[in-house]
Image (cartoon, rainbow, N blue to C red; front, side, top):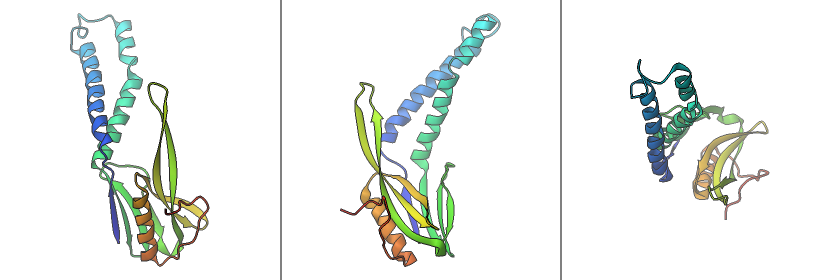
Length: 180
């Protein structure tokens, strides 16, 4: 059995344009310091140039992280596969953490959880959104199989398909999301 979940959602398009603008500004900034009017032998004196090189390093880190996140969101999908006594979860083609292999004979239960996410806008208002996760219970330990699902129906579909395929009886798990 194979279940594939694409990561794409429309908010990524806004982040894509934001990442392009952010990274373009930084490329322009470093071009000015190295090859532009402030670079070369006639450019800015050494100590000032060093300050202008070091100052945006945190911004470069944010740009790299944001670009990586956007590319993963646009290109990646998660594949849950059950075959040959193993349940495997793989994210790709952009590498991402969370890949795992679980022996199917050790899986006691599959269940869903909802996670409330809070974020603060520029104007100070807090917004909340709900995301959903699918977990497996193995030896009384909980392992996350899928996360970041935007619809409860998606999580419940995966839970029900896996339970049916693995012949698991649906039993309640503390903290489990209930179907409405």
